[in-house]
Image (cartoon, rainbow, N blue to C red; front, side):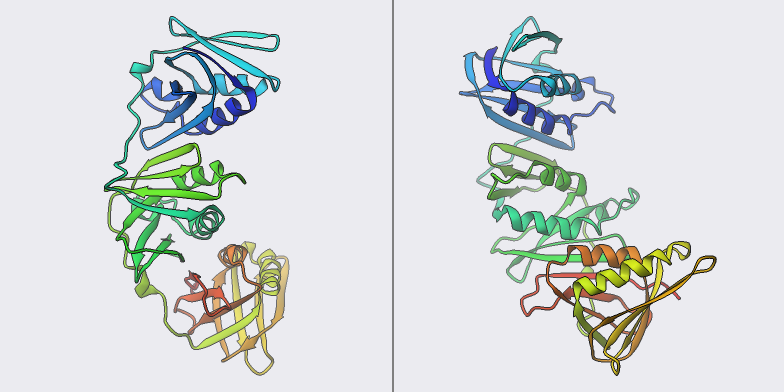
Length: 366
């Protein structure tokens, strides 16, 4: 193999692949990156057997071929080179790299030893073309409520599923839940995508990507972002019927500015650190306020109020961090906060007729 590429394109592709390459494994080859010519382009790929990523970049190919090299070394080396043309040449499983005043040899391994990259049948897969900005927002809004508890793997991912003619994303850790309506669909899909995969998709997104193609088969998902592809295994299992946890109506509804609600929540949270983030929220329909109270036994206490349109008086205790994070991902200027008593789930949503996102938080026992 012999070819030339630009340092910028090579460094960017290597950085993406090196995040997936794994050194914490019994298979040393998984700590390598695969370099292989593909027509008039160079493919850079890596896998940890759970996620596989590949990126095609333009190259001037002199001789075709392939090799695998240690991911960390080549990524850091190429990233340190000046912006110029880089020549790659393979001789006897050694990768010779030449660039403005730099000559290096990296010991590699035959590409035949590298695991076969996963494939998905384009004809049989369920596919979606999703606006990149909308997809990034949907992932951001749902990934934060996924669980990190490995003993319940089905909750460590985001549930992509069709319902009433739309594609939805949902996740829960048992204490909170988020649901996002994304696009219309006529296909049936029910798949749990690991959060690590969605995080990698987010890292790979850039301003040049307008549409992202998502393909599902029985056990895998593939995200195609222009010349980059990320393929992942799905999490086995059935996601819980979460919709039954979302209350259709609530006794107390408060409509207020998201910025005001977020500000008083953050202030209340400062005094709630000793009590596990516990803050008490009170709605007052006569005064038209939402009041947040928190106590730090040794430091003091705090009561903050925000103006709101309130339908009924009520009180509930929540985790301040959960509330702050939920308010941080809702994109409307005005939000609706609704709840029924001290034990029923609380719902946060944007104040619009076509709201496509809702966030549920379970109360703390006060």
